[in-house]
Length: 123
Image 1 (tube, rainbow, N blue to C red):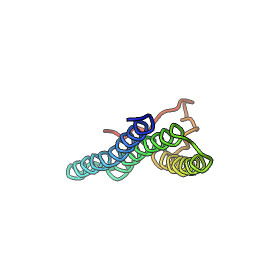
Image 2: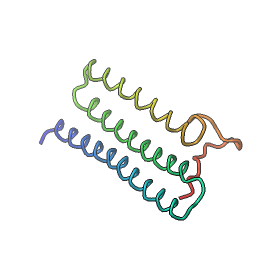
Image 3: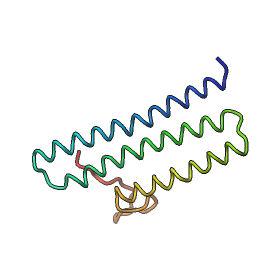
Image 4: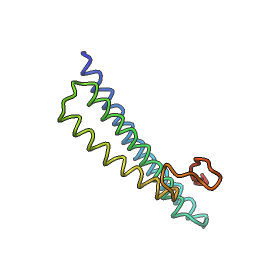
């Protein structure tokens, strides 16, 4: 097995981890939301959205990493680097949009105390 095949396998494994993060996160968010609904806890919907959003963010980060590994490590061309750039821009926009939805602020904004702090989801 050559270098390119090894890098391709590594990329596929990281792709799989990204998809798994999204699927497992969605399933866990749903289970927790149903459990909270049955207990009639308040704020079920926003907690569900935060948990699901974090799962999607993690999955997107892993998918971007896999794309970078496959594109840069295996004979990059202007075309493949251009496609990678477009993919990274789209996924970055999605990540920032999800971050705004989850925390109510952009990733580079600080909270009132001046610290970068993730929102508490209560789980």
